[in-house]
Image (cartoon, rainbow, N blue to C red; front, side, top):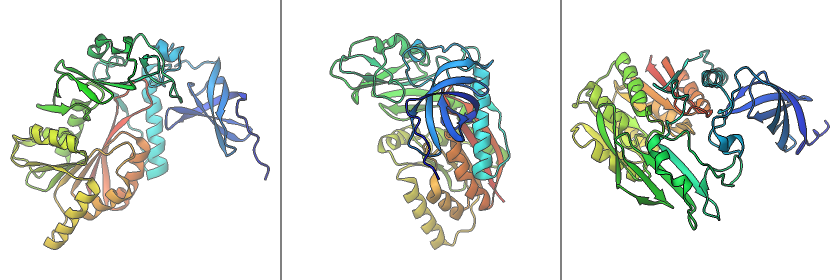
Length: 409
């Protein structure tokens, strides 16, 4: 078999077929797959190859659109349109069609990796249609170059792009104007804004302003330490908490069971469960990051039956299973909520959940492939997918959130 020709640096004329996971698009040229950025299905483009390692595929960047899609729009952000700034890779696509593309990716991942034939509607957060998906980010990270310029990185590089605006950020962050100042001697700036009007930023991890941000969501108040995790979209905490508790209510909830909130962060879902089903609900929230656990202890202090544990999920579940075996516990009536990182829960945690056998699992996912990969063994292990909702909580990017409800048969 002949070794494929290396196309690195070449400009190819391509017809784009479909979207792929990761915000890129698929074309074929001389029998090889070409992954192309900044294009759309149905378009004919010229694209320059920037990566070709001689395998079955290569990667290319659109240089000219020969036949544009009806869904192509002028990119809303000059820094991305002219400077190549990252973080808005779907900004050239109209907002409604972005959600269709995200549904395509989710549908394909579920079918290919979990054998599930399902196309969920990707729901828009309230107000995003009016704002054209702008002004939603409550968390922004800026990098600083050797000249003190602060801005996003250019895609696929560590080169800082100067920008006069941050159109995806909430107004409080834009008005702070940190991206307009010179930051000589600094490497990174992280900015966070709360829905109570606070703005906090850190310069190379040194926090400026209030020690904790105050957020109100799901009927409760939460305090988050500097650098602590909170949902990026301003409407995401309420939207996801509502989706999770609605799924629990539909499946049925045993307040006295050994209910778990895994990868629980600062306690959002544990607090939402208490707010929805009563302050006497029993929930243990588990988080490996000590600072987030400390925040959760504070945020849930008024709930006598809610406990925050600082421990890796795998270790916590291993101890839980050992204790259940010693006690001879039958299958549990508990509900388990898990919100793992982008990489997913993984085989070990999924296996532990199957061994623990809770009555109901609610899986909050930020990556469709990781979700589908984890769903497959859960379905094979005796769970039924009762519902799956998808949310566009990162407009103008390829990211999509999903909430899956699984009930033990």
